[in-house]
Length: 317
Image 1: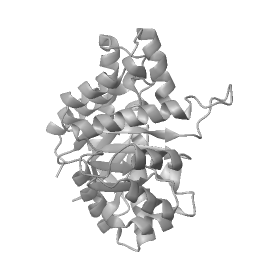
Image 2 (image 1 turned 90 degrees about the vertical axis):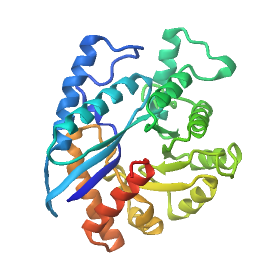
Image 3 (image 1 turned 135 degrees about the vertical axis):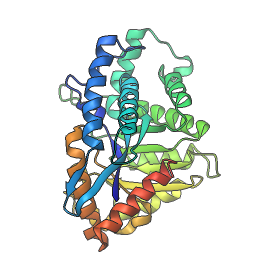
Image 4 (image 1 turned 180 degrees about the horizontal axis):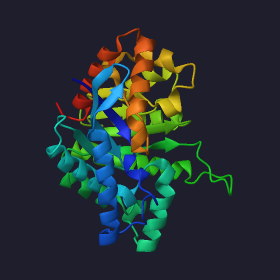
């Protein structure tokens, strides 16, 4: 049976009302609402799917990416509900990977939460660093994500970045250090920020094994083919570097197929980057079609190889 793996999504954010304000412990009412929603997510993702290659193609796993401390607990609820549903599912095992991190788009919200909480981190750090570390320690299979840099995201009311780049850099470095310390893979977001990102990897982290996170994944990769070589060189000290492309982001660009050919099937994963869990299956199918055409491969081989790559990257083999 063919099995898709969605290496990067945010389906916990499809909950009506979105993510609640940060609370150390979700209220019983809020937690129960997310439990009900998570059951819908689980039932949809664990069910059969009719794709163009036949009805034996199913979704068999996903990595669920946090965006800020507000949704760490929600990610846990969704992953736990999927695990529980999977125990009763007759269509086979489903592997879910909880991922904790602070996305550059939402760093300003995390900063605001810190002010409300009255936190005053020492040495100019971040109040959520210990929460991130503790969340990872409590779940040895968890990844760090989604983290990164973005200079294209502006507040429409002011025309200024939601978070200045220098503060984004501090947050990115802090999370890379935690991932390195705890030996966790990372999922990286980079938009119009390749210079600063490569500078961090080249100058702030060493080139030996153990100087960087063990595995790094550049999701919705928007760089040109030459940037692949630069990223690979900057990631020396990491055992594996992989790349993903999201249909809703990358497939309108004429360079994407060329970049996919540059990377090759052995370092590609399929991803959706979706919040709406109802779109995951169709998006994975479209992704497999695109990659198969770009690499002149059979679609079945693309599904099998990319799923194997994702399982290896997330330590699920």
